[in-house]
Amino acid sequence: MAEIKSHEFEGFLQRSVSAYRIYVIYGPDRGLVSERAGQIAGKSSVSLDDPFSLIKLDIGDLNKDPGRLLDEAGTIGLFGGEKLLWVRGAANEKYLVDALDQLSQKPLDATSIIVEAGDLKKGSLLRKLAEGKRSIVAIPCYSDDARALNGLIDNELAPEGLRITPAARQALIELIGGDRIASRNEVRKLALYCRGMETIEEHHVTEIIGDASAISVDDAVDAILSGNTGNFLHAMQKITASKTAVFLVIQACLKQFQLLDTMRAEMDEKRLQATEVMQTHGRHLHFRRKPIIEQALRTWNADAIVRETSRLQSAILQTRRRPSLEDSIALQTLLSTTLQSGRRG
Image 1: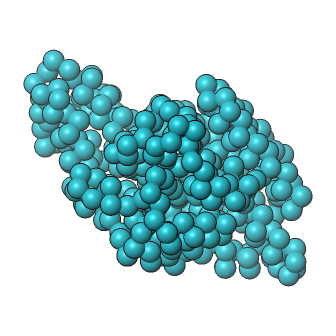
Image 2: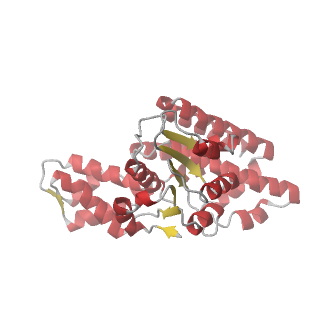
């Protein structure tokens, strides 16, 4: 079993990362998951701008071709050398777990695999596999505590030679912390704003920093499911301003519709009410989100959920094929889903 705690990650990155070939990075802080995946990729011997050595796969790609991960891992690169497979958007897909289980049983001499996942509950298939295999390293990513936030602030302000007063530091900590990438971007914005000064005061923080702790992909997804266009656009504005990848929203929305598909199928098969299905499949949801999911189950029928899931998967595929239009494709698709939810509600 190899699990890297948050305070152990920097040491692991510097000393032990090359001892493993398969990395499962998961947790509620999507920005931190993405950041740590990028740091591990940077430590590999693969050039990250070489499309023949670095293969990025979205879970939607694997949904359409469940055997692809095994095929890619077993294929020798066009020019030989090391190869990195980078999977984004994983949850507890059985075909992915089975593939990783199979790959973990034999040495991967020239292939490394990074899997970015969401908030995996203890005992879930992917997390259980990662924590139970010596050849796989599990890296949980939870929201930064005060110690981690202080370290982040110091690391970002040091290059500018800036000091920060205790009051300003406290005010800053209260406004960041929900997402690592969003927090880092907010501190960098503050450093740029105060460049040339000696000390950051509390009023500088309140003048320039938004509430990055409130930036949540879940807020956008909840607005989509509720059909609330105003809340959706507001959430997307905050996410965009924080430099958080818009792709994360469409990815999270797809996962939510996949969950709705499972729950709706059980409702129809067993003739259950939405509240009854929520007692089993909705236990892991935050209490504030449960009424929204329950209402979505009532307003979206099975056929509509399948169609919307397919449309979201298609949109994700389009963002991979046309990365320059990723934000536009994601925003247009998600806005359309929001409007459909509103009409159904």
